[in-house]
Image (cartoon, rainbow, N blue to C red; front, side, top):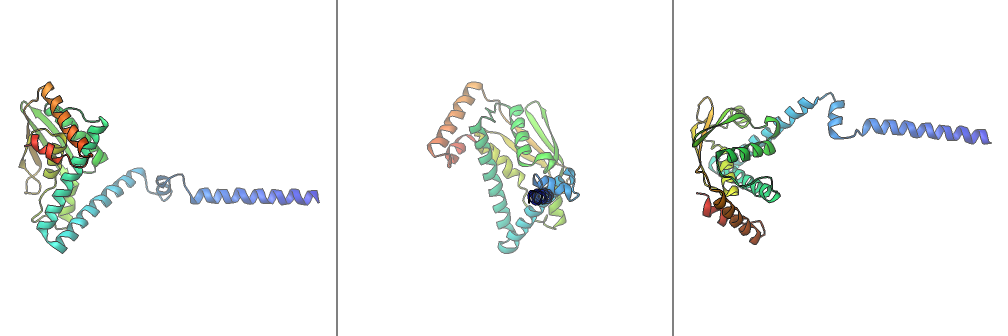
Length: 234
């Protein structure tokens, strides 16, 4: 009798171990492991995510243009880009990740941080930022959004959303700078080139400006600081 119980217990233990092994095969530690087991490397996972993201972006634009017209698609795209960027800048400021912006070097740091947070690992573009005296030059050699537009035959009449992205940064920071497009892939140039100009802000004035905007955001529950932004961002 005891021997039978022992054998029965051993059978149950082996069955449980087999079930755990099967469960381990079916339930990997995370989704990345699942992809690896399917033969998709980490680099391929990143490329798949990037392609899918931009495919969705292009198809969204196409769907709006088809239903309501190209002008409505452009307006919706620009509004969404500006609002999302402005909200991100305000959130980063509240977290202390973005400090006062006094010159083009500070501005460059903010843009680099945002590009990385919005589009990590080069998901958006291949570019450089060069500062020469009172001017800064953003130069983009390639752009995944532009590539998707070309593939989807959506380039005609398209208004680039990068301008709205920069306007969102401007309003979120509450600082005054200009950004003039001198070359554009969308316009048929070999690269994108944006000229930034900004007057250096004295340290004391920058602190007063930041407190004014943050106070307006707090008074409005953090949801409607646009009026304060408009007062300093020209």
